[in-house]
Length: 260
Image (cartoon, rainbow, N blue to C red; front, top):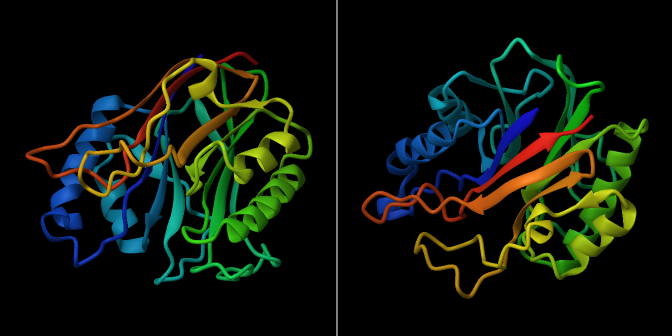
């Protein structure tokens, strides 16, 4: 079964973004998503009103947020699933990347903001077992903070996925794959891989700051997968309209064949 997935930091609704105000970007972002027609989407950085507005424009897709008690000022990673009777949401929740991951809005490790990971356990009628999606956003300032948040991320994934079902891990990790966050994750899960590496795609940055120029940045947005998913394609989406970009990050698009 083919899974089409997209992950994107959608950039918070910042009134200082001039021609890249959310109201101008939203139709371009939604067109980008709808043209790709993914069955799974992971977004990062939106607040509640922004996310609901975004979700309303994504065709035949719903946010997986029934578990969530929204905090108005927080920026949430969010999962969206294609409205398809073949898919079943078995379970979903959030955990915070802190010393108290079960406490909403909790923050540790000198994080600039409370950060979190959202997840869902999904069934599909053509697959022999369920799988998990984990979608996270790490601190954007300190290496130390990201490393400690990653330790929480790994610990919680192991607790939640204690039966070792297939899973996908996506998000804005705020550092390139050559740094310690990636090393911590890969050391913790020996069946996890980066399709960008496996398909031998040339490295390029994902954060372009609304310029389209990623020549001096790192690939800080990833989609990782367990070996239960065979990679077919992965790329960055660079669509814009008159130099108005959907986000200050390039979305990451991937296609996998689920082999379980």
